[in-house]
Length: 327
Image (cartoon, rainbow, N blue to C red; front, side):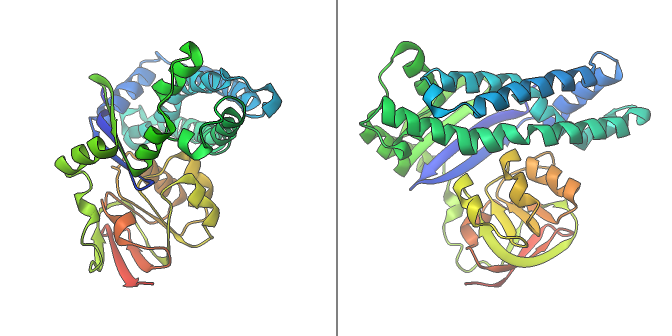
């Protein structure tokens, strides 16, 4: 099936925005659970294989820098391809667990929780720790013209082509342009489309993809969708990128464009979650239900209307966020 029709990533002035147009994710999940009902899948065997693969992956993450080669990153990408399907399944399918025969539901929920806990390392240690370490090594040993910050703006096909075929990389100047404006579109029907600099700015403005970032100073209340009931009051902490996680303190309100498994450590500390994007099957919604923390998703403008230190009330019953005090 097609859980996503289109996924768009935007960078404006070194701030990352994620936009997505979902397909029928629930239908994809129901199809999967129907296969489980029919006995076509042995999920315990899948977990054993998954766990073994994650253990191999962890050995790669622990590889000492002197043993790095340019091809090391390709190995990471290959692990991602092998692990990503089961990583998605154990999150999304729980939302439509009613598709399972009653006697299988508790067992599946336990399997899903066990798998989710095991997969935390995929994002947290891979993207947050290993990739920056690899890029630092690459800059120091192979690409002295580039800074690590510039290399962060390489796209997957460019890095793969450079390693496999020695295809020239975009210039440092081009990567600098991507820090200012970058537009990347992915969807099932075509390959990745991307533009940078003035061309990206023109496309983003023409499609009005960031129109919700203007005129937010006078907003006193945000509306979204309730993903988990409950109330919480606390200080806002904006987390747009993984480096922002280091500043997160227990009891703060997590505000983010969206979340993924790398956010789990700070989500466990947070009093509540607010996101720009997402639906009932998104990561933030599922984790909120699991942790029983108030969560409002799909506000569109939370990271733009709020600032670190603002005091807000998250009303998970009504799906609204009330701004009580601004910094």
